[in-house]
Image 1 (cartoon, chains in turn cyan, yellow):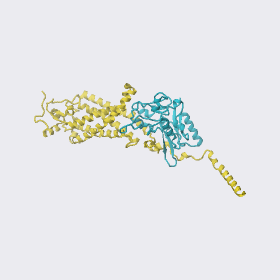
Image 2: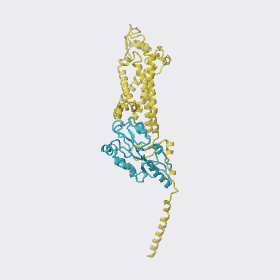
Image 3: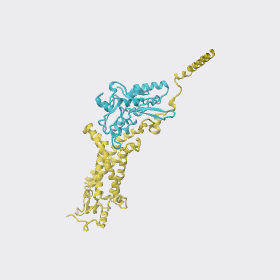
Image 4: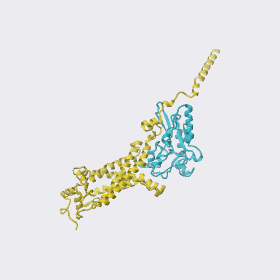
Length: 198
Length: 331
């Protein structure tokens, strides 16, 4: 069975934000919610690196562990999803997530959080696959159509890879060998307890 | 006409040679290594325990790429806090049960005299009960966040428990306001009698009448009550401040601050529950004649003589007790 992962090649990312735009458009993500974002480290200095980050769909997901109502579940592909019907908007998944993936709409008084929203690996939610209710709540379900996440498909430099962990790790390793350098797979140690020797 | 043409051809030949000569190097593996000067993920994590950069989204919290401290917070919330809470609350319940079985109820040794004096006026009682009721609501809904999943969800089902937890969250947020106001008012109203004083050590050394059968004298508030007072004021202040930080996320703190606020809120909260169990016990079941102090506001003179003799003396001097008041044995 495939174990889905993301890998962002920081040496190729040019901060074009095509992945961010693709995700926002495909799932009609509301204003203020950022499922995917690009972070630039050492901006303007030598050694500047940009990384595209959304939910990493961790092994032993910390978000799932701390949820007071247990609204998370992991699919057979290793994709971490959650149910917006059960979510109470407490915010604990954000405190636990090493990558800041959970997002909350601002719905009411004080800092009242609405239902949590995050990257779904384009795999929808607990509703029936490809149903309208699923689209309204979670966005499109490309995995059910046999496609891969749109952010990786739209990446202009193919720095963002998404798919079976073994395959994309292999692709990345080949790149590192061919060009002679690589800053490593950012986030893999934290998310999957794996590193790809660069 | 031939000279400019030859010049152009020579120029083109020169450009051609240069064009082929220079870029050839780029098609072989480069000896340049851009990664040598770039940041390394593990290095950043080791130095700062965080990887942070810049982004283009207005939400500044999104500029943190990785915060592994989330993993430590997860272990605190899933392991440490449930242990602390269970030991504190169940331990306190066990202590109370054992104490009741061994020591029994603290009785009025002279019985009731029938004569009473005012201990707490209407305002004080209102503030106490407003705070107490809010506390019960906050305690139950707060404990639900940590323990509800394990204790209630198996019986309520996922949807039922989620619906209950959603309302519990709102109750917790709104009940925080009367609780905070109550704590502030209690702080102001009762600070006069709650400063540590000379007689306190004596009272403590004699076990306060609860351990053993001594009757050490006490003023309006004995050291046990003073401890409760200061715990409520300081602990209540701590949960209020951290609670509001949690309720207005990222208003004044970053992610590390939010995690710290939740840790303080959780630990002080469960200790609060444990200590209030003892307070509720002693004020209801544990001591005869105690509840009416806060319930009706008036206490029997014999009760005051037994537990707060110095306060009773003062009240007599101020003429707040009947001239006939004193130890009267029940028939």
